[in-house]
Amino acid sequence: MNDNSTKSIWKVIGASSMGTLIEWYDFFIFGSLSIVISTKFFPSDNPTAAFLSTLATFAAGFVVRPFGALFFGRLGDIIGRKYTFMVTLMLMGGATFLIGCIPSYASIGFWAPLIVLILRLLQGLALGGEYGGAATYVAEHAPVGQRGYWTSWIQTTATFGLFISLVVILLTKNFLSETQFDSWGWRVPFLLSLVMVYVSYLIRKKMKESPEFSKAKAEGKTSTNPLKESFGNRYNLKFVLLALFGAAMGQGVVWYTGQFYSMSFMKTVMHLQSDQADTILGIALLLGTPFFVVFGWLSDKVGRKWIMLGGMLLAVLTYRPIYESMYQLSNVQQKTKLNETTASGTEQNSAIVTVTKSQYDDGTEMTRSKIQHQTGELKGKETIKTTTHLAGKNYILLIALIFIQVIYITMVYGPIAAFLVELFPVKIRYTSMSLPYHVGNGIFGGLLPAVSTYLTTNAEASNTPQFYLAGLGYPIIIAAVCFIIGSLYINNKSTPPNHE
Image (cartoon, rainbow, N blue to C red; front, top):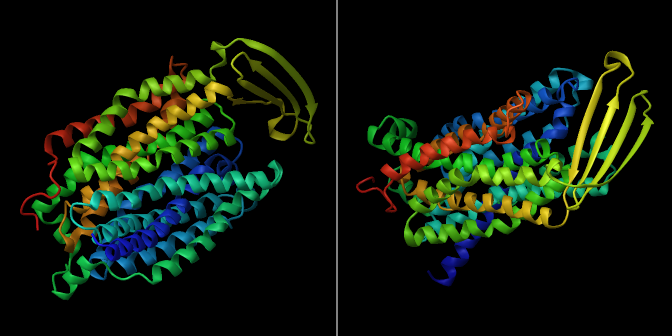
């Protein structure tokens, strides 16, 4: 590969990655702010139901991703990769900006969650068309034999998008008081996306169509009906199903366990202070992200199959001990209390607030706020909120436990773009690869935070021992099934024979 072609592909990756990163940022802002959003767009009388409703709305964006994959995948195979993901970028940016403009539930009632849901569905449709386009576009510029390495740079964008969403939230919180952030500051990350989308649009506007698609178009070899050729052809459909059940399904649950369930677990099960949980996840993501490229490069040398399946197997075998260790870091019943201070006061609404701060021998601090409501319908009702703050070696250990999960993510996700691209012919590639990817990630992966949180909440309500591990049943079963199917039926060679 000469200097000119290397420079050229870096431009392609830069332009593709910038747009994809911003789309992931837009998509993940909602998840990163799910706890505060649950108080703004849903009724506040039942915080648990409001949080689960927020996670369900978050999941709705994932459920429609396969429809976006079909709609935009078809466009991408007919009119081209470049123009299609220009449209998805603008759709995503517009929907994200508008979420930041919606009045709260207190102002407009049920219209608030309804509008949020509609915009979330538009985001899901846009992302359904974006990823397949970007991955296909980069792969079709990359030399054969190096697709794993070059497409792995696109794979970093999802994690960087989440990382940047966390950084923007933390910076916004730093510049504003807690009251300001809760009142209006949470809207800032949504509104900022409009600026980033505009910059990305200007960059993408200058891109040219991919050489493989341009050649196919010039030779009249593009598809007139990509949906029929992708899913109506039994031979191709076999590869679509194999891509879904032998790779994308397991990759989806490993990805969302490590990046979203871990965040939800830290905040709602370990009761970690929100900023500390975001910081821990951000550090782990920053440390782990280079491994997307490492495993993408390695997949060019040894094949994609066993790297992806190895990540799934490790997840299946170690998730329970990892989450057991995470929980025990914040479990104060296992610690020796050093001191405790209690203070009481009355808020403006006549609620009696009692705050108890406890310090433990390993540096852990726990704040327990008990609010005795004295007004309106809440008269006499008691609300208890617990917040934990880790310190010292426990803080480092929690970063390490999240980092291990990020490594699993890089193993399953780093090679998968090249794997999917090489599975299908050029004329139906955008459509064929997008559907299994977005079903695997959007449905099996996207439902994970809501399903796992629901399972954990139910187990806790039933006083189940080790209730905090109940949510792991879902990703472990899905990843195990995917590992078995992939082991039996995926070929470790780059491209299935006679597929073109």
